[in-house]
Length: 133
Image 1 (cartoon, helix red, strand yellow):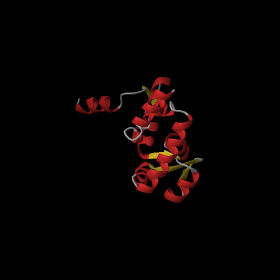
Image 2 (cartoon, helix red, strand yellow):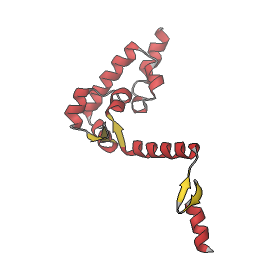
Image 3 (cartoon, one colour):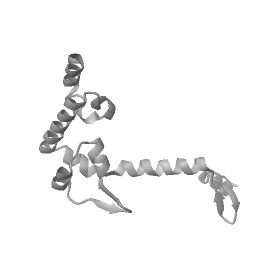
Image 4 (cartoon, helix red, strand yellow):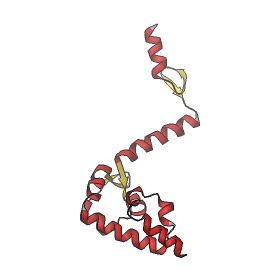
């Protein structure tokens, strides 16, 4: 009886069709895929994400992070390594100058991007930009 209860608690998704095989619904497959992607994003970050979301350039990536890991056509870095490098003063200065250039072109960029990293530093600048329009 206890083994039966343990089996039912462990296997909660899919429908048993015999001989240890299960059939999964489309929703269960999508949920599983989203779960796996979110787990991957907790550990790694792609070069595309570095450039688009965190304002890194190719030269900065080469200088500070080195060669990326590769798998199935993806180039990525350990997120922990990226955060350590972003904590350095030299990198902070370069990222701040890139952010300021982006803000000068489009003051709404900051609101759209959701970059929490620079929230306190440039809040006054953004308010001044909005007031001047």
